[in-house]
Length: 620
Image 1 (cartoon, rainbow, N blue to C red):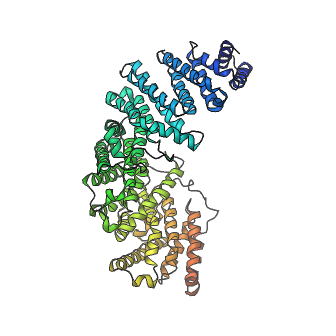
Image 2 (image 1 turned 180 degrees about the vertical axis):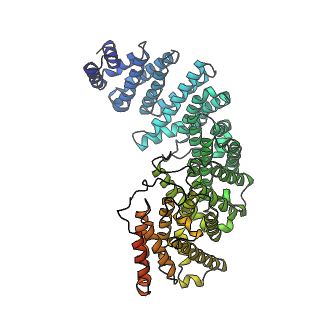
Image 3 (image 1 turned 120 degrees about the horizontal axis):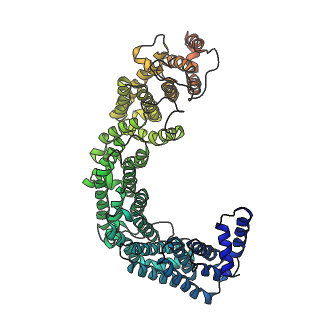
């Protein structure tokens, strides 16, 4: 089969005829690619003066090397690789052939790593030489450096994809000696293109190649070869360039820089033998993050804030004690303050809070008494306010059908992200938490604020129940502070649940009307009552569970609240059945509430069903 025949088939495949002609051409080319003749013909296609055909030839070679390299006789493998190198030199100098040249870089890397360590080592030399002769910032220089970076990245990636762990280990042993040299290419890019926004794609390629080589760890588990101190010591300009790229307006570059910095901070590399080198490098990275905060706090720079938070999480996951311990350095304290400020500032969406969530959870892993004083109650009081703010629906919210955000995403964010953070907040400041909720209910200016307050109360329900339902033996060993917290929590529960239950009265007292102000408020309040059903079963004042049961019955009439109201009513009855049965008049009161709640027709059972939003428009 000649190169011309295959060329004609490619033209038919890409032609305008369509239909049967394209299908026949595709079938022919797929079958031909599996033949031995495809080796020589694919090389020939690289010399055709048509970029589409050149790319097809490079891609055919790439697929054939990955699947059929063993079928090429060993004596032919060296000359074959030399021929590809000659074609790469020609393609690199041809305008329009850039895609084919980049694909050929991947092809050459796939071949070299299959030949063995010596061939891979030699290809590294070619990539370094290509970078050296392409140092200029002109178009041709950028193309050459890009190809060098593509080849370097492909060598590392093909090494990690080696057919066996033994093959991979042999390649790693040979290549790791060239790590610092290869990182020099990426560092050269940041040294020469700093501040040039037109070269963002080149910096992306540099970070991609550098990270691929840093992941050539001996165990093959994706760890990093160099510790932060070692990287800063040998290629500091590269590390600083990656940190500076976190505030780039180019999304791809910013994401590549984030991935690079997170990976550098992860444990895995052997620590530096120079005392304090790693610690100083991490503090330097933290200082750069704090400087990036000047851009990240801008409300219009949400994506930059998200990048900063992701890297900050990597910092605290590396060593939470360094970040939050009682001897935490000023850089780490400034970082914590920055992350908190970012979640307080960026509230239009929740991507920043999601990115920062693990930061605060990791801070809270440091034992309370061993933590810096500023990272105890003050930190979590501010975090509590930020969480409730993020849990609050927008003031212009009407229905889920008209919302400009996804309901499932919102529910997942609150139930999975915020609940974890709020539970941690309660653990640090239990009475302060409950006081905060009461204040929110008393001062709320909208039903949205009331609904978020009921959510926050429910988020801490598990911790509150554990506190107030401790066994006698556990209470005997409680500290004075724990006893005080338990008493305060019990009082808060009685006050709050009584206030909720009073909303079932006709008319309800002013302080209770808020719990009937909107269907979503009613649904949230029902879930709150259901969460505390175990405590209601232990409460000696039967009036409280009776009032709550009446509220839940009336709540079944609210659009969208039926499912939550009926479920909570079942839980309360299950916990309080003995009280209800043994207390005169209780069942009569519940039946009277049930009669009032009985609808003329079955209520809508979807949270989508409400439409009004004014005070009282959707009350009982």
